[in-house]
Image 1 (cartoon, rainbow, N blue to C red):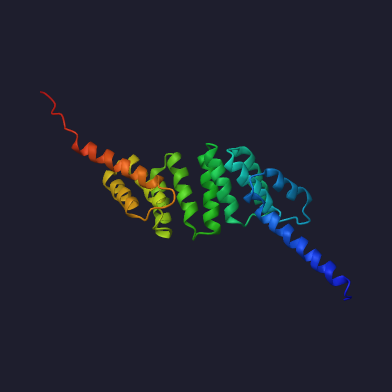
Image 2 (tube, rainbow, N blue to C red):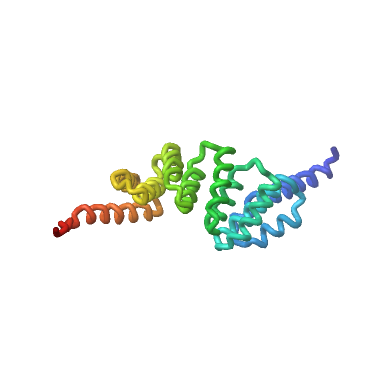
Length: 213
């Protein structure tokens, strides 16, 4: 190797590194055109370029464009069918698009590929609850709680499922557990749990009318 070739190889290495970083992380920006440019012009193809489709899909999710997100996640899965996050992302898009059955199928696939993550179980529970399958939703939430016991959101959502199922005592236990967990940046779960507990208490204190003969 000549000395003149060394700087050229270094420059090529830097360009390849930057290109790889852009492919994988273009979704961190809020401009889908960046991901589109990566998809159109990056030298990388195949399973690696799937990350650019995922990135553009996530931008579409943030902007509420569920159909565009689904189309991009479809392409990402076509190129790299073995990555759990692609199915989870598409499941979220299907759920937001009012397609709980498709969302459940995607969450099932994400869980099959990576069964140790709590989030797909939690999100599958939300889709099952939206589909009216409260029994399976509660089971899915329970697994999520086992994997992420400090997540107040999952406790709240299981409590809401119990409440919808007519299991007030179990719901109360979950709402109280959500309140006992450390305060997160987003305190929404604790606020809702507190409000639901107050509603349950008020319902218990309400006078019971005695029917007249």
